[in-house]
Image (tube, rainbow, N blue to C red; front, side):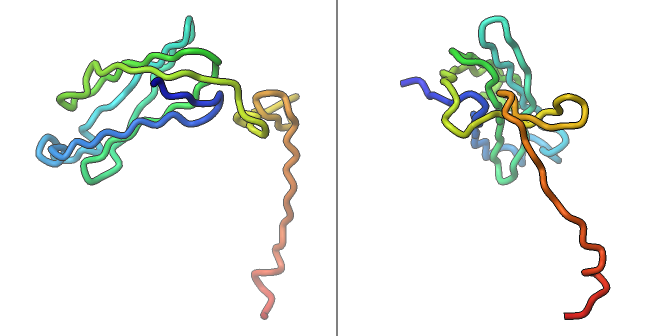
Length: 130
């Protein structure tokens, strides 16, 4: 059964590679993990990362509905040229996507829903006693 991820959700791949410490002196700098994701004419390549203890991760946020296929590129034996896929479905209620700038001085979610940010500054709190 193919995995299903909602649009703007997180697709995560986790790989266990116990021999990482013997392959690299510093896997954080020397290890390479990338994946190319394709959905029709849309293609995006993302970097993965070393999470420590022989674990490698790769995260991707799909932007388009439909079937995605991916190919992994890595200098880790056994991972290079690994392929797979998943289905991207409609976003769930309340999932409006990532936040972007809108109309130069405002924010909105990817689907156009406005985002209103509220905040305050309290400079005096640092100098007052309890």
